[in-house]
Image (cartoon, rainbow over all chains, first blue to last red; front, top):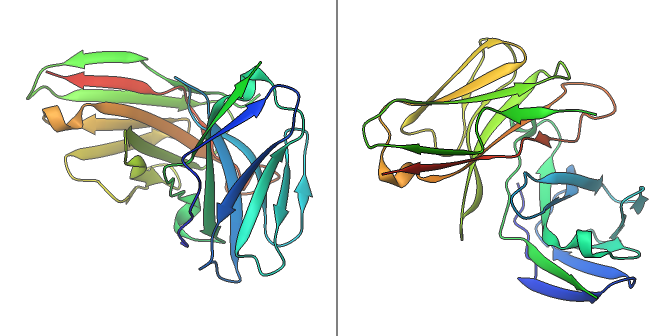
Length: 112
Length: 115
């Protein structure tokens, strides 16, 4: 599975959009981009995933560049409860029964 | 809602003890996983199971074993606990098919301290 690079930390004001970048320059054609987050003292929570098209769900939007070497997770109106560690993960289809390799992630702090 | 529960949130054991960590999921998922999480190392996969009585080693299986006698339950066993197994242990499950196929559902974690 391809390696990902994320900034170690980011800040965001409550109510504003939080844009979290992820670099995955070695991604291959059949690998998906997944985002999870982990709120303090809880297990990780799935947010969204995509292959090459932009995706949106009730939690967030995922923008993947045309060359697929990077992506951005967008939380459109961040709240204090969005303070968490955000993990960008790249995983191939059908590999290891869904094994996820978590890196260090980005600590997002949403402040009032 | 999918629910993954773990038997304890906090556990303190002594070196050499046999430790059982239990995980139960209520959504009939085929795949189940055990991870450990340590500062600076992220989550690392210990073992996973793709069906009842099936198990596969993950990235760091040494010192651990697992048991999956029933579909809903996946147990992690520390045969002889050591201080370097002090960690946060996370269980997850995932369906083999269906709309949630791409999503792993995690339990709240068990923070194990080995003295």
